[in-house]
Length: 143
Image (cartoon, rainbow, N blue to C red; front, side):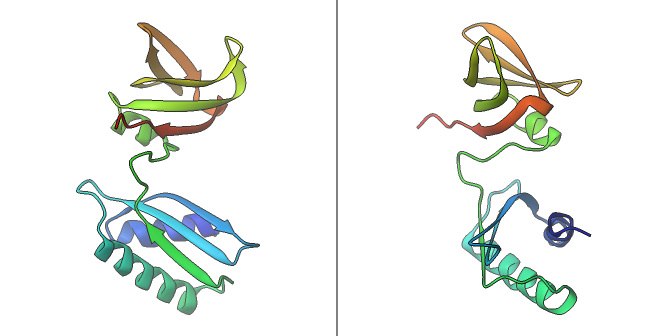
């Protein structure tokens, strides 16, 4: 089982969503981004950190020096199909792998997901982007 599957399983069992994770510094830093409908508190992060570190130490031989757990922030990354459904109506930024209309970067209102196509309204026009062509998508909160 790969590390993402392991982390997803343990975080989900605790009642949270694993939004994203990163391994950096040659795998020595493990960073988790968690969420739940009511939002994430510091206490949530501490509890998940304690549980995940114990789980990895006892049940799996994964070599890391430091574990960080945090909320995904206001500019949360959108990766899964369920993210594009959940955040319908939100303003988002999308970066494409292959340009559309000569561009890779778009900002607009997320209209949802239709048959593996991300629907975004921009300047009154509905644009369709294949999920497989989305390199990165994030919420774009208007502050």
